[in-house]
Amino acid sequence: MSDPAKSIRIGTMVSASGGEAADRIAEIRDLGFESFEPFFWQTTNGQDLAELGKRCMDAIGERDITISTLGMFGNPLEDQPLDRDTLQGWKDCIDNAHHFGATCVAGFTGRVRGKPIEESLPQYRKVWSELAKRAADKGVKIAFENCAMDGNWQSGDWNVAHNPDAWELMFNETPDDNIGLEWEPCHQQVYLIDPLPQIRKWAGKIFHVHGKDATIRWDVIREHGIFGKHPFVFMRTPGFGDSNWTDIISELRLAGYEGSIDIEGWHDPVYKDALEMTGQIHALEHLKTARGGAFVPLAAQYGGGDPSLT
Image (cartoon, rainbow, N blue to C red; front, top):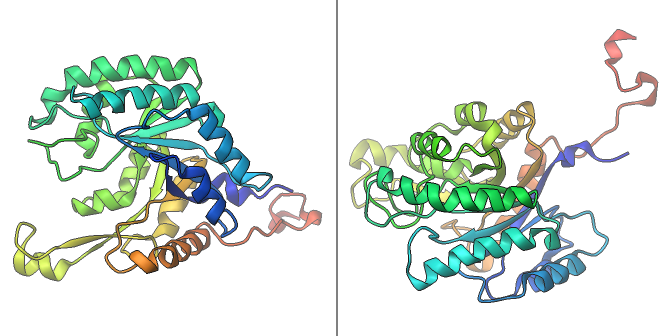
């Protein structure tokens, strides 16, 4: 019997910008991860993605591990050399996702730098309407991560899709069914937004989930506010932050989400450097427990029904 718990898989992200994704997968493939998200930062560096996809799949081998999503993080709305690289990277990831077994490409929307969100919408519509069609023709979904990258409504360098009010504007501009979100609770908590009601409202647009958490220091907020010299929030690895991942995964299940939660490490102020993988493995087990733990099949005599009815 297949494991229905794995309708939501727990995995991690692996850097791919320098061609190291396959080697990284080979290094950690037997640690219990059920999925990987290879990701590029601003540029693919001209790599042959079909060949990279083959190497990643060879590294996985016959293991029950998937790659559902590729990441391409940069600003494809502007026109600096790296911005153009990012736009080309999106096209290449969309065109080559199938070589990884992926059906989704995720990243930032981009942004017209230094301007309020509304001023990015015409360029957003121009770029993403074209990319949405390109992706739809290949059976690929596009998912926008909800990270502000230190921007806000009035100004920023990277991403429009960090606020639910912005999502309303974006999805009005691009009503395409294959454009949605790469969601995580961390970035909403950083802006003091309750993540759970968001799942219930936006579940139909959540195509991929990042496993990242946050710790809010309410004592600092009460004494110093959110614009003082003392940090009021830390991004955390799941299991060390404030999120109730049992509730998050339950809400995702109730909404019919079937996909991966890929851990985004390298942000925790404690479990970093030599403790990075210690933190990630803790997060892996924490999320598997929040998912319900080990799958236990229903006894055959119940026939998959409710035993109280027999």
